[in-house]
Length: 566
Image 1: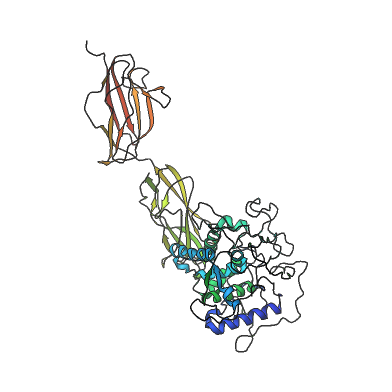
Image 2: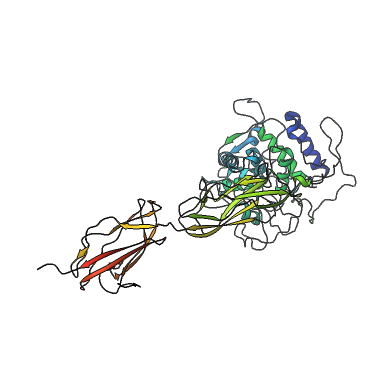
């Protein structure tokens, strides 16, 4: 199977028949789980199933080529079970360690943020196998990034889809047309929307298996899908690539991996040959792969190309296991009561919080069906946008949750950071084209309604000397300690409308220059603030130091400059 993987099967009757035989064998060993809920009868392999994404949508991969080889028709060789299974089965069921870890990590992440989706990691493994041969046999570094970019063919309409450049070549190196990128083969425009940081390194890299696996998981879960339901799983796979042949191939690997798999070292997995004009990084050191004839790439489903084989006048129809033939079934009409019509604000009012505090109001969204009634199990993603360090509970900048029976869903508690000002939280039906629901949030500076000096000792200095005692104050808000409150200190003149004094006591800046106003001062965790050293010039007299807090609290402290006694 290792040498066979990557060999394109002939489309048309041959492909359908081979796929049907494989699926039938899998179904015989696993029962109903292998049946394609949305297959539509399996008549040609390239008609989208009922409920799938419309075919004019470019899909996650842009409908770029994929490997159509099917898994062995025997159970995987689970460690600790039989040792007599063919080597082919053992090799194909092995998944490179980092790749397997990425799939399982994505499953755990989605279980936390979108539990209603019930994403199985074996589905990611099946798609990863079909798209890139598990990152070309697990040729990734310690962080999960492929040693060389995995690029699909140029999507220039010559045998494949026509997708003009959307990323200026940033991901695929092509500034004219797009190419599918990475082990999960995202086109750049889709990655721009769905890209994730799955390994927490601060980057969203389509060539990193952790990032790509998490992005693929979120894409598959879009639209409130429950992947434990066969029809939803089929729709998710078809949204990834609009082809029933693709669905059958992924389903076959999915069922194969569900029956068992095992971990193999990175770089030791089955390495597929080049596919449809994509890049083929040099093989691992020490390996000598046997050359395999590579037939010209077949055109993608529904796209015309120069080498499109003519269809037989009477298409063959695969037989169901146990006899009998299938026939296409009409697509079911959408049920208005189960069709998402709109997403709206469910009563959230003004969002305000003090820096470092929690927003008292929580963001709430309502999903309505086409009849205006509540719609449950709609996946809604809340995303914080703008220049802010505010975060949802748990330090997250985006969370995905599903609506309840009343059609509403409430975001986690929103916590303000230290950055003040306005930012936006957007709520959107995940994977839908409906407009986002925006919420404006405001973070105000920490405030104090009272400030007082902590000591009462007279503050004196001789002309030209420094004050021996420091000035310390404490700020409070409604009687409680006010930490992190901004304070301004100014040497002021006397009179009803004081201004900054140009003589008398002063501070020094970092360069030793004389300054009589200090800003960017803040109280500590206990609400106190100790001012820098204060110096006296040669003019004697009584002077005034004013301290003002964010919130308007003020205290005035006297400073005496007098000559020492004779």
